[in-house]
Length: 279
Image 1: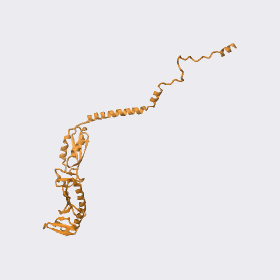
Image 2: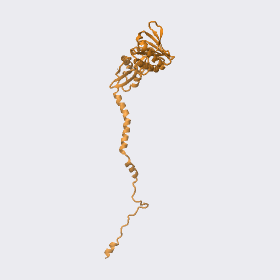
Image 3: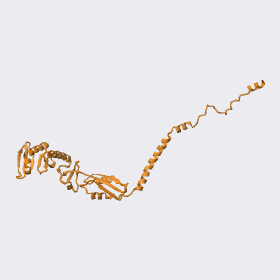
């Protein structure tokens, strides 16, 4: 009985003593929890990839420059291609000769292009590198439409140019007029040429004087004076009179003056005198 009581009255061990000054706040927080959370949330794979790209971007220009320097060599030849009529291939090759011996990679192709396009016959020049040591130049020439004021040429797009050898253009119509009105002359010439072709007549030339008077020349040599006013109407009147009265005697006609309201004046080759032919 006494033993049983003693067991029941055995003291229960108390909590271990707390350190003086310590305060119990429950489970101790992790001091680096926030830092760990930030680091855990950061996309390290993307960050490393971005850093690699930046580094690569910085190294590529340097590496490319080193490779090009190692591969660079002198330009040994320049080939000129293209269908040439006005230009001389040898002269073109001589013109580009100053780039022979220069750096294959460092040579500015735009300079060659600009230099060639200053030549009268050259419409455009395309320049490219051909590995390992050649340049290729493709030339496109201007297409002449007509002779202009005697010694010059006018291209199909209305550009005037003055080559040293305009005669190589061959047989072309002859146009004349103030330079600032060249496109107007071309437009009128095309209209008249198409109309004449429909009547089996050939177009040889058209001139516009400074005071505005037009003169047409046919392929058979007949000159047609159209004046300044009502040019289209006078032109149509001439065609009508020519078809009805003059076609059978065209080889005798030297000049036709259409500046009349009801007819034309004809100058014949034989007598060189004018006669009136009523429409």
